[in-house]
Image 1 (cartoon, one colour):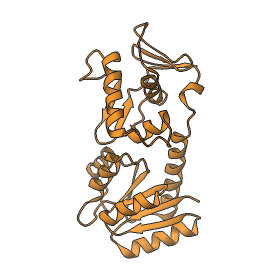
Image 2 (tube, helix red, strand yellow):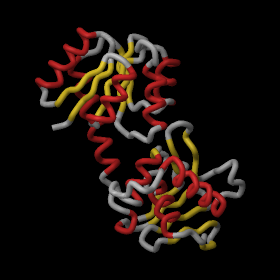
Image 3 (cartoon, rainbow, N blue to C red):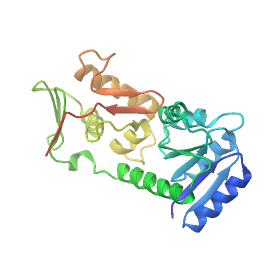
Image 4 (cartoon, rainbow, N blue to C red):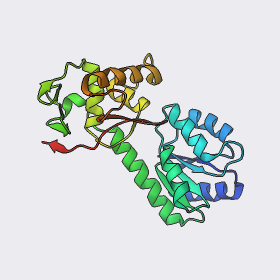
Amino acid sequence: MYKIMVIDDEEELRQALEELLVTNGYAYVGAADAVSGMELLAREKPDLLLLDVMLPGINGFDLCSRIREEGRRVPVIFLSAKNDIVDKSIGFRVGGDDYVTKPFDAAELLLRIEANIRRHKEDLDFSRVHNRKGSARIGELEVRFGEYEVRLRGQVVPLTTKEFEILACLAAHPGKVFTRQQIQEHVWGESDEGLKPTNNITVFVRKIREKIEENPSEPRYLLTVQRVGYKMAEAVEQLC
């Protein structure tokens, strides 16, 4: 059973969402503000978060930024009475996955919840790098998964095993943003708590850029998404 968390200061809406979610087979947890919401998020580890934008104190956008800065990858669907493109753009920039305008249709919200959970689980369920076949080409950079090899303009790039696995993790999903936590779990596994993703992943990324980028301070391939994580530039060609 998937667990949905709601952070919204409107008690009536929380009650209505609880009834809707429980009736449709979800477990429910709820909070009325950002502070208690963060505590509950860490304890309950929900599969998806419905987050009100206009929260008292810390608003939903700032709260989402904090969630991503901590490396939490839970899908976030913003709930807001505002429907303008500016607010939606802010929501996606701070790491939101979807945006639903109040008042919303219950059936549509359930479909969005299902779609975001499914997409999130699929993203986390990809095979480890050494099981992949073929290669991906991004500009002049080629990542050969099965061979554990990276070539830049035809020349082999001397990456360590972990450097390769980080790069291959991103190259296998060009354009998709990964948090440091996601990269850590993919390469090292969830059980390795000794790795500090906000420190070590950043160091690995810097070393990779020094080897593949013409100007590491202005990368073309391995890109930073502020307050969220990293992504590979869109692939020019995916090879089987």
